[in-house]
Each structure stands twice: as structure tokens, then as C-alpha cells.
Length: 413
Image (cartoon, rainbow, N blue to C red):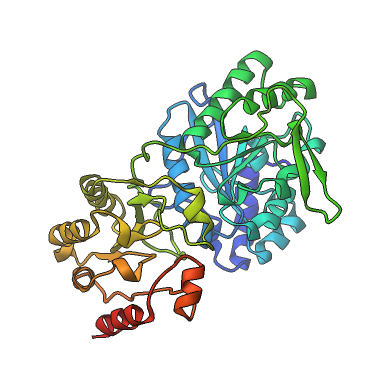
């Protein structure tokens, strides 16, 4: 099913008018990055795959961060690959159109590395759909030298074993630094062994050996898994000297610069606005919250860094709304100062600010008043998670009912 970008483009010209929302597959959006494939400048080509439709993947900040960071390097490129909606998937299978990237319409199998973002477990099966559409064998052991290196990262990889059969390597932890360690290992291996496609399986094994030495990288082939009688995992044992007994998560000490050139879609996406991560991690320790545990320790951006990013975002994108993201935005040390300074500078432009994940006990009426100065009236969502004080204490979210009702009354006023 291998086809050139020109062949894929001709096929799309024939069928896109038959599908719902053709703009899911056209590319060409403002701020998308297209680099030439020919020549000698680009050494490594990375397909960033999000196993869901365009509207969801286009709103994923993690993928946009990697897209921005990789494309800032002169010797590598990153392009986006999304899972098609069922109507277009059926046409792709019927007309033998391979899974392709939006930027240049290269088939997914043309990339050196395909990196899947797995933010949650419900997307696991879509990974298999995308591999199948790319004509790439589902299981890593069944792939030959002609296939790309298939890796994954994201919150859905913290328990890697359910999907371990389908990936050459899985990244545990934060990806902004380790992705370049993986690419460097690939480039070093390629210099010694030729391209992935011309290397035999023994040489491919040598790349796994390099990857296994990178902190935070789990190479499933180098571990044996035994199961208990109830089918739970009894033990995971390394079977190669390069494989550590425990793969420790990668943590970036300093968050990378915020993305300011967001891709502006032609159609509405789930979060049709800019997003700036103001804080990573959380100290609350709610017992039901995976993210609050795995993204520790807490790291904060300075208000000056965030404000500079807002300035650039407005210039490059024209969005009228920006979300200041974190697991608990009202716990950000400078939240009132940041909102006040942002509205003082951009209030005349009617810029709206979103603060997701608000905690009732750290929310104030003064902060609400600042947020109300934006372009549109903001809604406020508070999630007590449980109906009684006792149950909230059990899940380590100790919010008194009186405090909850008093805050709701103030917001309503």
C-alpha cells in the first residue's frame, strides 16, 4: 500500500468531498511547519501520532510542545498524524490510501520514527487502527527492517505492559528532553548501521540496546513478564544487561519555553484557544488523581515568562482566549498577579482568560472579578467529587460543605 505524497494527494482530491469535515485531513493551517524531505539537511523524520481524531489531537498541548521543539532543530522534522473518523477510514481501506501526515502527506511508513502520544488508556485500540492503516505489523516482533521505529509516551504509558507488544520502546515520564535522547541514539545507530530500513534484525536489536540505556525508556523486548493465577502481573524481570531492573520516570528540571505559534485550525476543535502551562505538578494528593502523582514535583513559570508568551501568542495566532493550564491553576503562586497584569495589558483587546481545575479553598472573589473583565463572561466549574464532608476527607479533598455553598453563592452573585 506504499504510495508517494503525490499519489496520496491525487487520491484525496477524489474522495475528500465525500467525508465529514474534510479539513481534518488537508493540513495547511496557519503556523503548521513544512520542511523539505529532499536534500541532506534533515537527518531524522519523526511522525507525531495522536490516536484520535483531528479535533481532539489538535487540542493536545503535549503533542504541540514536541512538534515545536523538534521542528526548532535544523537537522530533524516533525509532522502530525491523526486517526481518521470511521467514514474516511472506510475509504482509506477501500482505495488503499495509507495513513499519512498532514504537513507533506508522506505515508506514515516513510518516517524514521513514529511517536504515539498516549494521554489515556481509552486510545489504546486506536493505536492498532493507525498501525494497520499504515501497513505496519501490529506487534513489534513481526516488523522487519523496512518499518519505522515505533515508540510511545504520555500518561497512558506509566503502566506500559498492556501495550508493550506493539512498541519498540516506551517513554516513562516527561518527554521534552528524552525525545532528543531517543533521536540521538537513533542517529548514532544509523551512522554505524545504515538506515532502519536497510539494517537486519540483529542490527535493529543493537538500537534497542542503545535505547535501553536511556533513563526513562522501557524496551519491552528486554523484559520477561510472569503472571499470577488471577492474571495479574507477578514479576517483570530484565533479560538483557542493558535493561535496568526499574525504569525511573524522566522529569524535566526546567519546563521548556511555552508554545506561542499554535496551529490555527480551519475547523472548530475541542479547545479552540491558546494554552500556556503555568505550573506542572500538584501537592494536593487527591487519592483518585493519577496526574497529581505522576507529574510531581511542582514547577512554576514566572509571570514575566507567561506574559511574554501571551504577547507572542496574540501576535502569531490571533486567538481571543488563552487558558493558563495546570492541575490546580488557583494554587499557582502568582495567579492573581498574572491575571491582573494580563488584563491590564490585553483587556482592551477583550482577551479572555481560562483557569481550569479551580480549587474552592484557593479561589477568591477578587480573582473572579479579574477574570470577568475578559471578552466573554466566564463560567466556573468546581468539582467537590463527593457529596459529604467525610467522603471528601477519604479522597483527600477536604472541602467543607459550608465553604462549597458559600463560594457558589458568591460566584452566582
